View 1 (spheres, rainbow, N blue to C red):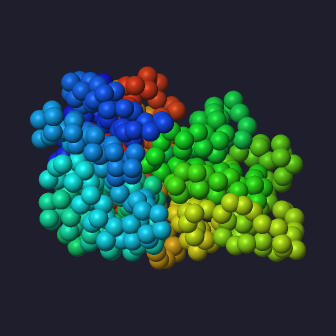
View 2: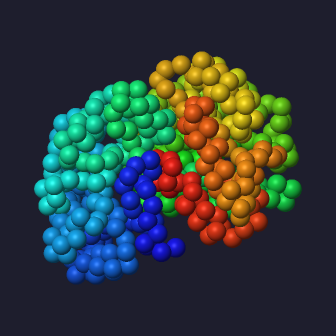
View 3: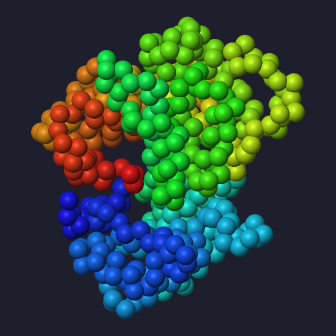
Length: 446
């Protein structure tokens, strides 16, 4: 990969290098990067051909933006670079209007960033964190107005669930307004036991531990599980784990929950496989009680009882941590739509996709909840190989995959998860093909 392998960012005319320069540590402080070191990093990046510089208003208390502004001025190459920054986290303790996604705070954030950076526009502006309060319509209007004024050229979302970004995009398309071109996220699968029969396509680390480690070295991606096998987990412990990650990561976690798809695992936990749907509902209800109420009293068939008075701490920072169903988990669509914030299922046959999405929309109700599909990917070296359905997935070239994803989007699909387990090629080749032919056609940053 070369830094000069430029490509469009999402569905936009913004042309960027394949890797961005993150500047979160630029600035004074015990763990920061001093100005001479930061300048050397900046110079090395741009000399290699990189053109996407990312910062945020809260990085080093605003010093990152100020430092970057000095580098832009001294180098005289502002118009060669794509400047990206963010707002949404609190900048003033005890001042509610200086946090969140409301119109005043976003405008305040843009004005402050323009001043600190010493520029007349921000090329890519990120809503740094979803506040779960401001209506999507207000956020869209505020960002669209900023585009119209020329203060920002494009915008995207980090630390926000895909259904919310999809809602913004749908509203923008319906009203002829500029929509988001980026969303960032990372998902982890839960594999309780290694089984050679399955080959264990999930990552090897325990997902919540892994996500905690990733939360410590990232600041903007959404962290999701896809999904935690809920019948195997104690709801009180899971509630504490999810709430802890939510607190420590700034509310970035989405809890993807499943009932597991491997009957052999259930006897290892001394659990009857046929009870998985009932256990899932019971565990989910307790999980919600532990994260959203204080010291609940409960009596359950599978997870014990409590007279009340015992609480689970901490509580998540938001009123409700989003949860999505990974697979049907033995439930009907009506139950999932009433209790959870989204659904990801193995991909139906393509002719059945519009009907499957329509059934979900009819049962999930409001607010908007995303529909996602997942499958194994057999990616051919022939980029033009036509799209073909195979067992539990797809066989195609990168151009055929991009065309299928376009058709899926038109059918109403909001999220596609691909597992390249059966692709007998070096992963670097697979990623290069996806970078070249797939990612530029979709508003994502992964």
